[in-house]
Image: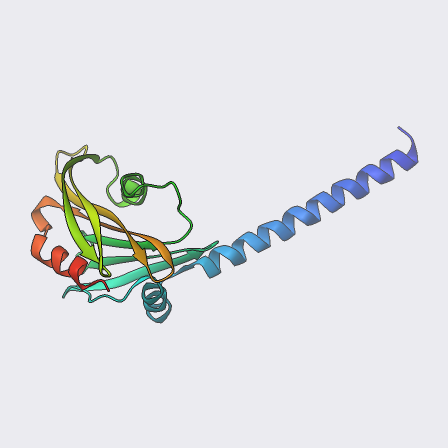
Length: 180
């Protein structure tokens, strides 16, 4: 290999390494900007999706804002019951698929089964809410709701999931009814 070829090769490798480092720094910056646990920022993200009244004993625990998709995670004090509100460019993602996606971490291994559909009104618009039950690998039973609605900025989804022993149907219905 000629000396000139070696120099060109070293320059190309150097440029590639510098590009990779810049990309990695950019990804860390994007990640830090995209996910927040700050109460003020998470509340602000929630207000971009819809106005709502939190059930007593619930707080917004985290928010995301990634490439036009925003969302918040709301939990009760024990952390067992979870509500997700999401809005953005999720075209083609059904509430069912979104349920399975967002519960994959908190409710690992739960096999969800749709058992009923009911009509609800969210933000003045009638929509179909699917009710699920599921059993985890440990034998515990779970309940979940999933529906799509029109948020302040476009298509949105509501997902609610909890273990059977802490599921509070009235509180979840009151929350869904409060979304405006």
